Each structure stands twice: as structure tokens, then as C-alpha cells.
Image 1 (cartoon, rainbow, N blue to C red):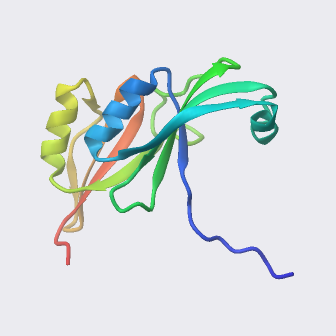
Image 2 (cartoon, rainbow, N blue to C red; image 1 turned 180 degrees about the horizontal axis):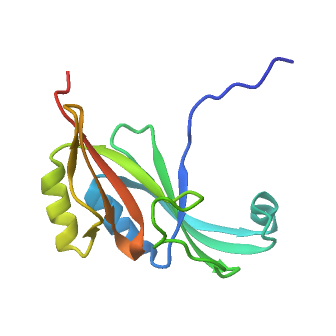
Image 3 (tube, one colour; image 1 turned 90 degrees about the vertical axis):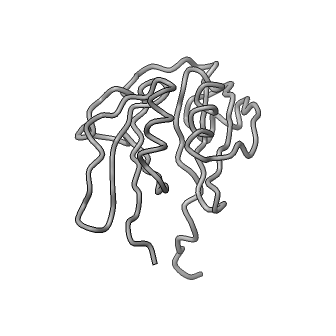
Length: 150
């Protein structure tokens, strides 16, 4: 039997309190709702180590179809910690970044819906314009606009 190989990254999971608000926020960025449903029972807890659980899940997909966000709202067991407002230099998974076009227009739309620009929109050489925003529920999201795309 040969050595296992990585095939693709399937998704990144984000736990939220309000699934509808999170779906709306990530839809505004450009992701599409791929599916929504309940994940319940002992079998799910065998994967997560949480025992019997009940979780409402929404899968969001990027326009290219290659990347996904799994948004989860735990009904049982309840969430036990919250690091949504931790600064970017904290340990753990803290942000997801998306490549977008017209970053200024998107930031404008998102801030009108309550998102906050963390610092500034900055330019890295002649390669990217970048920023971090705090979106729905304080989630940290990075946006990157590639310049001089070929």
C-alpha cells in the first residue's frame, strides 16, 4: 500500500450563532449556498468527539466551485468558547481570505451592512490590494484584490 497523498482542501468550518446572517454575509462576498441541513446523532459525535450532537449546517461554495465554507450552528452541545474577536496574531484559526475584484466596492457594500474595516485597504507592491474586515458576528475575513492579472 502506497503513501497517502493530499487530493484537495474540502472546506473550512466556522461556527456561528445566527446561520441566516452568516449565509447572507458570505453571499454578499460572492459565495453561493450549496446546501443546508441538520447533522445529528451519535455517529456525528464519533467524528467530532462531542458525543450526541445536533448541528445545523450550511455549505457555501466559491464561484470556481473549488473552495467551501461549512457554517455550523450548534444546538447541542452548546458552544463553550468564543474567539471571534481575537486579534489576528492569536493562536488558532482566525480568518479566511478571499480573492476578489473591486475590493473598494465590496468593502463599501459590506460596511453598509455593519462590517468594520480592521485597519486600512493597503497595497502590497504591484501585486495585491489587501484588507481585513470584521463581518457578521465579529468574524475576521481577509480580502485580496490581485493587481495586473494576466
